[in-house]
Length: 296
Image (cartoon, rainbow, N blue to C red; front, side):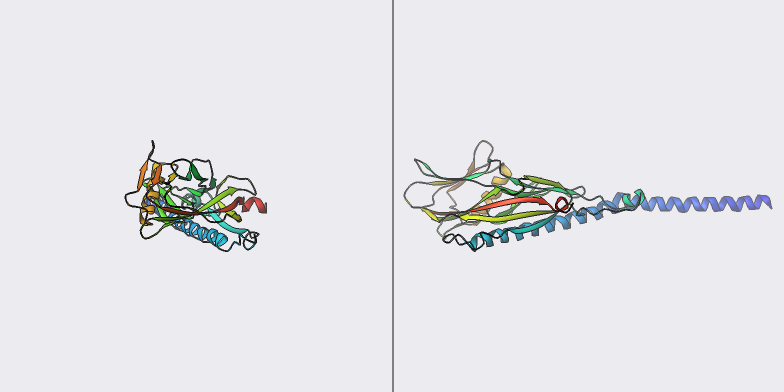
């Protein structure tokens, strides 16, 4: 009888161990496949949110210069528009469960929002004897630190929105440049962004960040008349950005035989064959503020 009891007890132990083994197999499969899949989906959804944010920011910036009264110096000039952007796929959310539960869900990614104005990107209008215009092309840029999805960056520049990935850069929303049907007239609005307010050039981490934008002025429209042999040159940060600009400028109607890409690093775009150039500059001040820090 004692031997029979021992065998029954041993069977129960073996059964319990097998159940634990099955649970561990299931948990291992979930950690290896389920957690990365869930994390990837969260990061994809967050990057879609970032794209929508930049689209909304472009609309906001456009509304400021469209409604600005440059004659009486009023309108949207005294209005600060604030946009909140959440850094990271979890938005700074924390979970109080133990270590086991932490391992059963994906880690949240982080991100960096920055004002890029190092002077390496600019647009020029030149003729055979002089430089008529030379303006920097500052970026507002978000760089993701994704853990499960491909790293991506979105940035706003010259009224356009661009997406940069490891395989190249593409234009999501066209910049504020247009050409006439015959490509003889170019219209350019230069969005001159300056850092101000908090003087913070970048904020990294997780959680919400506030981006404040105010228009400080809009220059009168100017025209470079025909017959001066002028060119438009755009210097970009790298070849990838230049390819994206090259593609969208062609779509916008730049002279097919008058647009080239060159320079030592392939980052210089030259547009020739345009008879008349109309240009205008809108001046903005942009500042970054950590919402968490503000409420601390």
